Image (cartoon, rainbow, N blue to C red; front, side, top):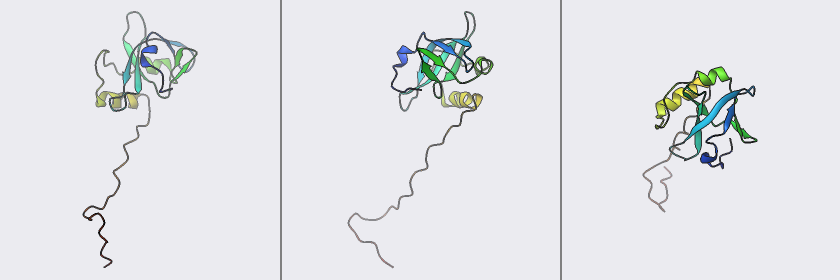
Length: 125
């Protein structure tokens, strides 16, 4: 999804599933703790139903409507964590697994040789 969109502009927009069926209306947007980038949307799925969390990536904003590339049934069956609270890393992991999204692990730190003095030549032996 576009990362330059103001998450406040997503609130109140309609959300459709991969087939164009209405899922509901966006209630809240959750930002990534580290980057501040919008990561999840909580979608109110009906008048008396709960909010369902959907990933904003790989969703798209098309003509003012959020297009979520998953089936409506899968979205409505997503884990229920309630809204208005912070999503823990464990909850986010459950959501990623629910949607079958690959979570890339952070790159391992580069192998750095320590113990050399700046400007000193290495011993050739």
